[in-house]
Amino acid sequence: MDLLIADDNALSLRFFAEAAAALGHRCATAADGAAALTLARSQRYDLLLLDVRMPQLDGPEMLRRLRADHTAASQSSPALATTADSDAGMARELHAAGFAGVLLKPVDIDGLRRALAGTSMVAERAADYAEPALLDDIAACRSLGSSDAVTALRLLFAQELDALPEELDACLAAEGADLRDRLHKLCASAGFCGATRLEQSCRQLHRRLATSPSPDADAIAQLRAVAAATRQALG
Image 1 (tube, rainbow, N blue to C red):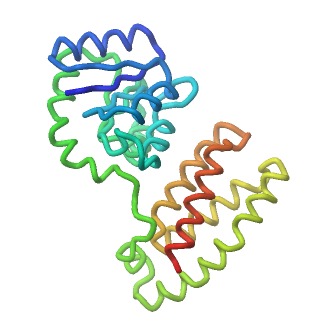
Image 2: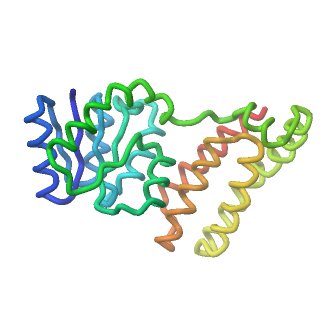
């Protein structure tokens, strides 16, 4: 297999690269998330091993940007998260972010072999981790109970999306003071109406704001783009 391995710890990066090569795999390496994203955009890899915490871009954010880039060669490649944190909550978040599995560090070569041996099964499920649909009618009907209810709520949701650009501008002008509250409301609306891609974008940006008070310009731009695409899909 062709692997892309990204880790800002030089020792970890060397171990993964040498161990994977010893197991017969071809490896490309990156010391931060931005470099990994550049490589993944230009070349198709069978599997990505991404450290959760890296400079420039962390693993989850790198994967989010890759999945959103339809021109990227490795857009749908399965990914494993590597981390020294064994917290169960983090593992759930990583699975929700699109990682097919979590590999705990330190790991020995047998552990790496077992993880890579499951890649054929992971690759078959790669579509599960691709970017979700703009509108999921089945999820919306399940949430709201009937197609009539979906139609009615989506009319209101369309009006909400029409007003969203100006509301985001106001939040950012106020240095993001109300942005988390606005994202919380938008996430709920998107969830009810089956706007799965927008709901995911809201959750990701909301998590980033929990650790960094300054809004990420790229993440805001991505949210605007997904919201506009969702509004267009609503008709």
